[in-house]
Image (cartoon, rainbow, N blue to C red; front, side, top):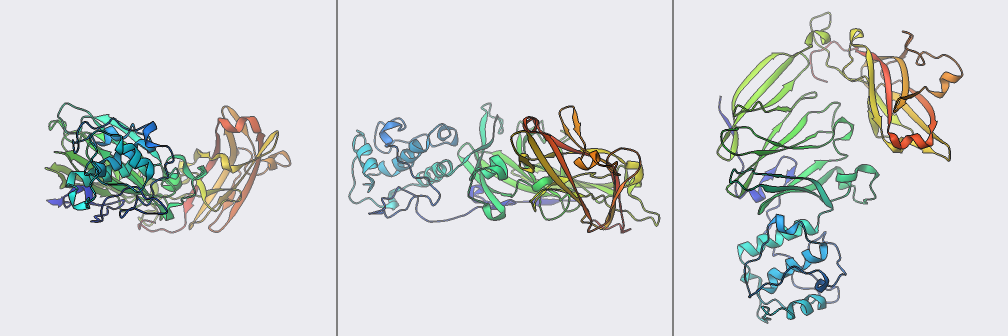
Length: 460
């Protein structure tokens, strides 16, 4: 079985699984003055830099149009003010006269600068355009989401691999002060050497199904190369599949291949180190490995294998069909966004057990001495949840719901007496804990299980 996944070159503008790269032919960017804008506008998201460039400018160029180091590795150490000067140095090398007074003052002080009244953008080379674009990536960045150093192409020199966020939301989550909601998708940029690739991440951070992950993998240890794997979860159903992007860096190009899951909790990646990489899918009853190998710049599917999934018998119903696991959802007071799920995969009575969920600090309402945490456990799917006990855990200390102080409710002790929740039903628990303990991290623990009502082998 041969199935080749290919992307068009140049890969700098490849269409990506997380989003689309733009392939604009618009001219590069220089700085504007509000009263007298330059013919070429600054990047749309570029910050306003009030610092005079003289205070932190990059090293001066010795002669006009001398090549400058415009690699991502050289740009990452520069401040926003320095990046502004670096970007405009590309134009100054060709004699551009700037409308920004501070830029003109800076470049007129450089011995290599010669003003050219006849300057036109046609004087810029392909390398000039690429440099301006790379500088803009760093100017528009809100910070580093991830960085690693690894020899990806096997030349003996480690590359600096950096994932840049366009908004603090991607680094700090929904509690950040960013006023950019991303409209459901947050752009980022992966940079290596002289190339970069835009990526769109689903917001918020894969929701409560799992965070983004970044790693260096080695699909074929015999070829001297290593690859970059970036994974996230989709957001449009319970325990959604993983979206994976594998980047192959070779001969100065960056080639992405998408390996995406298609079912419930599907799309995990396995790298056994034998020259293959597997996309793993399962549908409760079966588990399928789709195997790929590197073919030059791309991944090519070379094999597939399907077998009964581990533990499949636990989900088998009386009529021989299978019920995929689901679970109830936990909401913090006043929030329509779930804090997470509890009793995940505990889909039969024999799987009954304790499970915990980390709660965000925003779930607590604080006063001088007490943090009150209100949680709503909601059964939103066609199943029945049986809750034997519920408690909060901070460090080694357990806190029962406030209601347990008044009467011994079904959820107060692990005694087999249960709170039963069918689809559309919920129950609210209120906890009071010492305010000084909240910063240590709060976990919800529950003992119980749930049972699907539908007896269907289809993935839900």
